[in-house]
Length: 172
Image 1 (tube, rainbow, N blue to C red):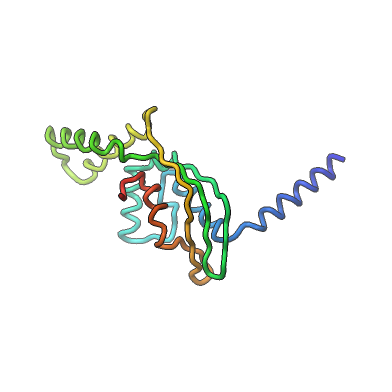
Image 2 (cartoon, rainbow, N blue to C red; image 1 turned 135 degrees about the vertical axis):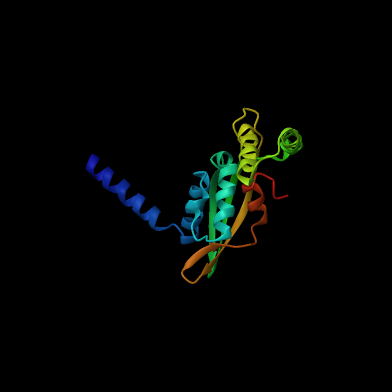
């Protein structure tokens, strides 16, 4: 009896996993890379984009680890797919004036010697907020659009609200 139940559950899991749309798989891969706090795992980046992703990871990595999501539904038509998702992400906008004041105070005492030292100071301030118990969050349900490019599914540029929430409100 246990063997039959185990076989039935295995078959059900197989059927469910086979039904996942490729755009959803790509979305989940990208979100896992983001939640790792290291955007070098994001893939398909080179040159200046790689440098920007690396800098973003250093400054906001702790915040990226706190992003959560739930896929509500996936709709696909031809070469487009829409993933309706609820995303919860840290929101830094309530802290921006405080962060600016503290950064100005630090800079007035001693100018950083180089860009890396400046990034380190900024990262330190952000990490303090990301790790504070009063960290504010934004939660939104929205559609994330994907388009098929050859045989790959890529996130569309039309996802401004999604990008805002993933950048902790700093893209406003």
